[in-house]
Amino acid sequence: MHETVLAHATLILPDRMVKGHLVIRDGLISEIGEGSAPRGAIDCEGDHIAPGLIELHTDNLERHIQPRPGVDWPHAAAIYAHDAELAGCGITTVFDAMRVGSIPSRKDYSPYARKLASELLTQIDAANLRISHYLHLRAEVCSETLLDEISAFGEADRVGLVSLMDHTPGQRQFRDTSAFRVYLRSKVQLTEDQIDAYFDQLRDISARNGAAHEAGAVAFAARVGAVLASHDDSSREEVARSAAHGIRLAEFPTTREAAEECHRHSIRTIMGAPNLIRGGSHSGNVAARELAEAGLLDIISSDYVPSALLSAAALLADIWGDWPRAMACVTATPAAAAGLSDRGRIAPGLRADLIRFRLVGATPALRQTWVRGARVA
Image 1 (tube, rainbow, N blue to C red):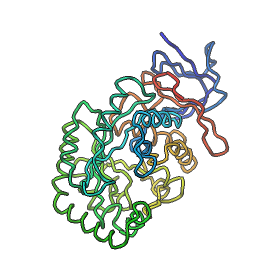
Image 2 (cartoon, rainbow, N blue to C red):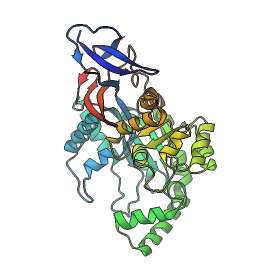
Image 3 (cartoon, rainbow, N blue to C red):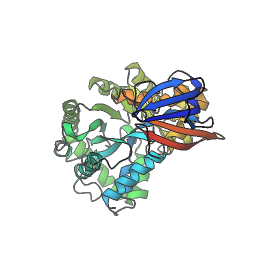
Image 4 (cartoon, rainbow, N blue to C red):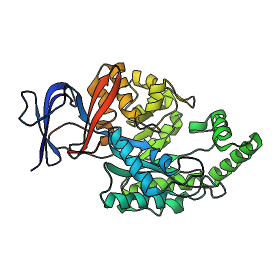
């Protein structure tokens, strides 16, 4: 039996905070105590001990694979760096986002997910990674190849989440196409005439393939047992459509109206940590803080800044005056949404996926990360 005791800690439990100690035995949380700690305990000096963070949506692996446009970094090295970065940010379970659905005529929009997923799974099987990895397939319905690409995945591929993406100009995230134009001008460096032609191409692709691709992605999620999510809901009608598919998880609703409708349908909402920390959306969508203050925010995702997840929890704790509620947005609630009942809370019998941090002013400074009781950062 291997035992570790964390003592003199501020434990963030599901419903309260206590000063005490925590006993880890053989990778599981064994005991929670409020009295004197056993001998040989690690002195946490009053630091906070919380469940390891659970990330449902991050593009961070893609950033490591392609650190610059046109640069294809060695994938094994990129996977190790991504894994270590997340561990160092307190993330102990991640759903790595990979796009399925491509437009072959665009050099920057070609298929990649199956190959990258296989490489990631190889590293998981070899026990080379520090934290738990699952796949999040972002099913782009406005594409040419979604059904072919998604059919290459099966039940053995650790697909935990499938989100329905639709980047057709004039709806959802790009209901206001001006934000889409800014993105294409700055990142892809298209001219206005090229953007107009591209919009026409996307609308044609959507008209030809959208309905079949959406139905195919919904059926695929059911076949492999993955949680199905919507993405960028912007209206009551879009949320109702999501609910009709059985969706219970909405990533980044773009309006308060959509977030309110999600809650009416018992659909949990995910908002981005960068949106919360920056004070608003960089795309002009609804502010995460507005939804938090209205009781319409359920889960936080780091999106494109892994270190933002813990910082966002601290900001929510300040907004709500409630650390357990804030930490649930990055631990217990995403765990429940993803169907992971063995983690996300400090409770006896659950995995000892834990983090230790202290507040430096209002900023949480991560000190240690454990996965199944073993220190990984």
